[in-house]
Image (cartoon, rainbow, N blue to C red; front, side, top):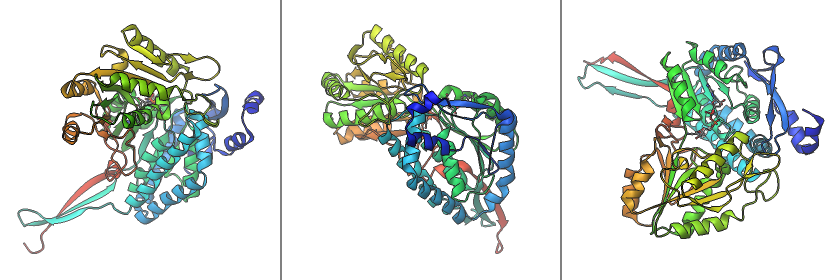
Length: 497
Ligand code: NAD
């Protein structure tokens, strides 16, 4: 860390960064990476180095898996109540340290502090929810149809898991995997995104403090993502791969996981449609649109990507939305009143700029913003585009930035056809006051989740996940723990037959 960097960090930021672990967590010990290698973590609002963390080698990655394998049997045999209590203890510690967790996320990822606090609440709920689910792992018992035997069905831990998480929700994407895995009795190695490793290291420290036994959760931070992951995924002792990230990387990982027929959960990209019908409450639709689009600076897999608005209200919807967007304050997420932080890096800014330029070159009208913001940090103006054609790249690609793209539609069947015209199927949103139409849309929209007259659907108690190329499996809800459980069926002769 350079002195110049230290100068722009507040005392509280500096002491928090100093207190967070920077090493690998292997078998309950914080250790340096092989050769003492490290890599820098940067503040996307300033581009400056915050600190450095261990840069694991392939050998380090395999050592982390060794530890998870060694701890597996004892952890699966630990009573569900104790597993649940450790998760609950971590949730309590997180509540006590919520300001620190939020500040850490704002520093390494850029989201405004208020949103980071929301993520602490949301992400923390997975620890609490699965602490409660640990003691509700059920089986069944019955007589077979022939009456000759008794059938017993039990659930048991899948075994050692490899968890890979993205940078956009540094806490929630970790707890959404760690909590169900641990509740089910699985041990794990987690590899957070290299851009945002600090929150995962912080979380692992809390779990340790809550009494998690050595080796149950191991953390590997690395720049050699592909090589380290390949070695772990190819290892025959691994039983499960759970990945959240882009569809392109997910596809590569599914192919690699196939070699050992690994259990997989894939939470991948999205291209969410946001439908506004002419009978909608337009003010409510604008509120929902702001949440669905600008939460996390547009960098959410659930972010509304295509605003499909009935042609009779499209102009008015665009006008009201633009009015609100013009009031946004862009800046470093730690500053009072900032509503839009930076994008994760300059590559993201360039990509958003290209998508906007392409849409405008194909006839879209620019209602607000549209340009990168000069100066340090990776900022892009909050942007609204009207009359976006279905031939624009922005209609097909995940934007991952603060850009609203409005495309008018003629009628309900046109809206549904446009909404489903994508290989993604994570979430859809619809605003209408017509109950019959709402019910038709629930059936017609090809997505794993739907927000009906609401702009944010995420909840630890709900099964989160997509269809088509948005993924396989569900996280959260009653379903979440089953991703980490295997079903075992036993037949015994009927003693009375
Ligand atoms: P990404 O695919 O680039 O990276 C995700 C993770 O995979 C990171 O930890 C990264 O280091 C790792 N990774 C990258 N290449 C790898 C490789 N060859 N082998 C193994 N691991 C590799 O995605 P990102 O940019 O971090 O995140 C944004 C993407 O994640 C978006 O597409 C977004 O929609 C998606 N996402 C999906 C969900 C969901 O629940 N469906 C949630 C959040 C984000």
